Structure formats: C-alpha cells, structure tokens
Image (cartoon, rainbow, N blue to C red):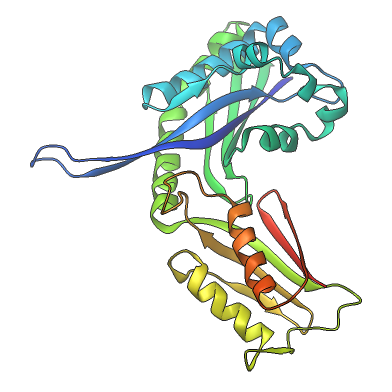
Length: 292
C-alpha cells in the first residue's frame, strides 16, 4: 500500500457579498486564499518530494484546481518557495513540526489535510481519499470528506487519484463553504487560559473597582467577545479557562484580518489598566495570560 499525505493550508484573503438580479437570492461568498503544501517526514525536503513524484504534483494540482473553479485565490507553493528562497524554513530541523512552522510563516487560519491510499488487488486497483478541514486556532473541524476512485485494472496512480478527488471534492467544498460563511457571520473560536504566577499576591477573589477580579474579567468578555459570545469552561481561585471565545474574522475598523494576538493585546491592556503586571503568550490560537 502506498500512502500519500498532503496538507493544504488556507488563510482567509477576501470576503465579498454580492447581489444578483431580483429573481435570485443575495449570496455571501467567502473566498480563502489557498496554498497547497505536501506533508514531509522528518529529514525529507519538500521541494525534492514534489519535483521527484509526479503523482503528488498531480494530486496537489487537482485539489488546487477545485478551489480555483470555485473562484478562490490560490498560490503555487513550489513557485512561491523558489521565488522567495524560503527553503531554509523547511530544513530537516523543522520537518518534525512542519505544520506549526508553516503557520508561523504564513499566518494561516485554516488547514486542510488529505490522505491518499493506493490499494492493489486481483479485482483492480483503487485510491481511497480522506480529506478534512480544520480551524488552526482551535482544531475545530470545518469539513470532512471521503472519496473512492472505484476499481480499475490500471496502475496509473495519477488517474486513480484524479477520480477519487473528482468523486468527493464538490461535496467537501460545499460543506467548507457553509462553514466559512458561518465563521464570517458568527466569528471564529479561540481558547483562553488565565492564571496567576506562583508568587503573585493576587487571585480571582482580589477586588478591583469594588468587584472580584473574576467578575470583572467576565464583564470584560461580555463586552469584548464577538457578539458577546463566549463560554467559560471553569473557574477556580487561580485559573479561568474559556474554551470557545468568538473573535471577528475581520477587524471592524480596518477591514484587515483579525487574529488572536490582537485580541490578546486588548485583554493584556485591560489587566494592565488595573495596575497588574501581566505576561501574555499566544500559541496556535490559544491565549495564555499570567498575572504576576
């Protein structure tokens, strides 16, 4: 059995709303910018993998074409890699955590992984395709799909791969489009953990402005979470965990992409305005706040 694993990173580029004639409905179109990137094991060079394997290039191209046909903007990864001389980003040392490395360089919001399995039998050869889209910030699933090429008496992996993609990509894109539209409307989810340094003289019971810090913090989220949408998983005297805080996809003032770090900065400033010394970190869309 051959296993070919691909990773597609998607990051939002353009959101358009357009109105058709009176006989048609207004349609909200979300157009992500797509970059198709192959997975590589530790020590493997991504550019070499693409240059030496025609089947991987065909699979990448076919999935890219599917997004192109939907009007999404796409970027050719290999050409981008050569043009910007970014090969050092994907050296052997970084291959073990390639997804995190790529995200940190590209600012991706969505990644889509596709796994292609080649099977050979007396009844014919086939490709099974499993494809899934996940939100980078939380890992929440956006879309999942399974494709099967059907069995044929051919060992042309490329042709079988094309059939498997063609048999599944339309439904997958429809689901992903719906989820994109929901994110535009309702915001994207991030996780937040707020705690105290071991030597801190404060805790969530400490009073500021005549209220416990826990109550002030919840009031802040009620005001600053997108559409007042947030969920507190649990609170103790020294820790608060929020597992579904909504932030906007776009900055309401500038129209630029809005990311967890911008939200973390506002939360950081809130605590600083209370006279607290604070440390903030943002890791893969999760915000960590430590009050000292």
